[in-house]
Image (spheres, rainbow, N blue to C red):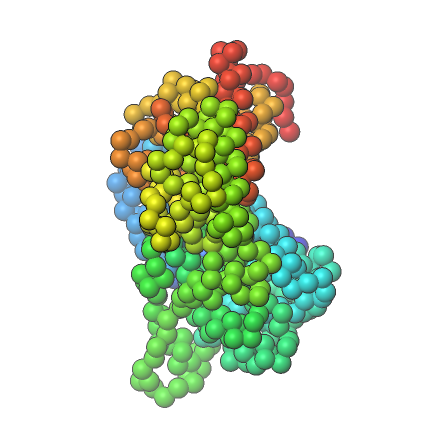
Length: 555
């Protein structure tokens, strides 16, 4: 089976016309901006990741059309890019794909095309990583037995570019022999579940049954569903999930029956710039989609309709969100029986672990006096070291719990969190990290000062074996961002959040000129280890005078 649903060939975006399925597998060849917009609006191309990649190639198409005699009309490209981004307002990936590609505009058509192709390749990798992490979680929550899962809308390779997100998790489980069957919601009013998901299930030979949307709650009540697995079009800073209309009622039914409700989506779907689910603009679609289907009227002429394309599920109904970086659990979900399997440690336990590591880093000279801070995430909050305390004498009681969404304290201890809290929360809002370490090791701090610029820059290290410990995409090379220092520390956090949002490929380590380094990971030990590896590598570069070493080819 060909895994790719989108390709770029000879200046054209080639995809499957989803309007024709399941009766016909029809190729759609898109060569103009108007065709890009029409394909997105008419759902010939749909699914948040897919339209994000489609939007990226739309920018390339716009640039090719705006080039005359080798000169690119950048103003025209920017105007066309804005039109593409406005084609559908709810799915954040569309604007993300357009903006990420548009950022390469100064490099001309070749740079834009290279970025869009990278997004296309990246999507497949991201989907497989998220799908695998979600499959692992579902098996932990539901046990080692053939599972009966329910899904809504379509989240497979048609909605992405390859593999799929929620359906990707179903495929992983099927390959493991852990899937008994999938109940597929028809997904009114356009029947993406019936037309597309059932088609993909049959294509992958996954056992499935199609049901009407209103039967899903009864399937849960009669013990035919072990978990609900869906995708997302946008996930806000407070953990609310916008997805195809009908998702919210599934989450309510799942919560009532004690069934895990899992959201699988790429990190690019997380929209930290939107604070709350209530801030999402929900697309309203044409009445004809409700009053009839396939050209056949099913309601009296002139009937008024309510036809939102999406609904918004609050975070407290979501057991877990899974991205390519792993499980991002909501604190409320951790209180449910399903969430306890992956709940993080209590604040007091986290505080004890933080204090122990802080004392060790103090002894090494990396957290002198009151400098430096450490945090551990717990759902939508984080436990972080308090301000103004010597790290050499820190105890479990010397912690503050803050909200990830706004960095403000949520406990009644009266202590102030570390001044650099906004740096930590910026990482948590943009990455799937569970711990952050901010320290001031001498060699890494010196490197940051020497390589700093007026804005955000990057410094490259190559050839050092220690790169393997830094979470780089390549084992032999890493580009680490260097951020300028600001007296206003929240501005540093804002710079970091903006950069990490725009550069999803950035490694989990960074420099702040004159202000130390920040590292993060899936555990506090991993975050600390990355800080140690970075300092050791910086010491070696100080001794050798070289940041790049030739070591031969790396596969």
